[in-house]
Length: 275
Image (cartoon, rainbow, N blue to C red; front, side):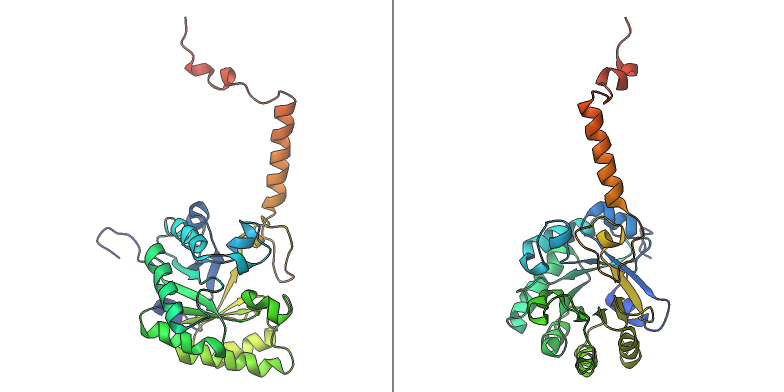
């Protein structure tokens, strides 16, 4: 607790230390109001590159830029006081070299106030993760279905089945040994996610994986039913706000067209000077 009484935001070491304890809660956020709503309920909030699809109408995450991530990261930071903020490194910002990854990770953290970055990849990214961690950049890893690699994975398919199981376990061990403080497991069979969770000493964060993971994350627009272009099979809708919003917009449009919209003289009647 600081001198001002403000609760200290969680840090990477706090997340790492939660391994095997109460499951971690996380959602994505891209705006200040949404961050404010989830701050008291989430252990960490991810500024995900999914912003490109759910807010900017892009067909995938590949078109997301550093500037977009920084803009949304700054907005989310204004809404958080206790939850840790993690920010995605966008496609093309870290794959070229360790040095490129460091420059861009440092920029993301310094310009947004994020407590960590998240990047996709296992064995292939272990050296980069180690390079970043050694230079003061906390890294959350992301293996299994890695959306930035869907063109080479053949789409949004379940990962780790059959012969690919051993490769995914190797990815988990590689990012752990490289110094990642947590690892996201996306769209992998539950039994495999449970095996990975038991095999590594950092928290596993499931998304379409297993309830046995050390935590869970969902894209908030999916969870609230705001993003309706498609729905992953593993997503549970906790609300249907997209339908509610469409109905409200339709009602508003009908009232305007039928001149049923309240006139200003009625709304502000109590402000009109009496003569």
